[in-house]
Length: 104
View 1 (cartoon, rainbow, N blue to C red):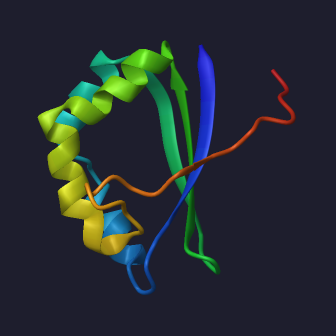
View 2 (view 1 turned 30 degrees about the vertical axis):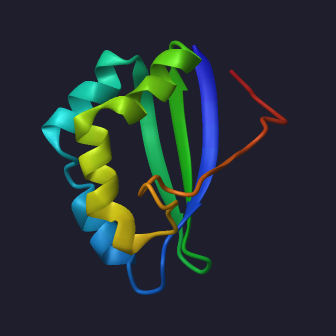
């Protein structure tokens, strides 16, 4: 299992709407994530900076990247674009984090 962590950024005042849209996420997006080997996926909010910290365990990097090609994912990005920093194609701006410590 590969552990991934990354950060994203919410726009001011969008914290509650972001939370609402994730509870629950669309069943078709959940199915796409699981079909491509994503497990134990969590997103945390830093309330003062509006930074989102995401953690996911994946089976394979290529499968994880392939999620972006799914219709469900592209529609989700369009659905979320006004809440957070995004690229022109609606992909969230995300910055990968480097693991410096792990304890099993």
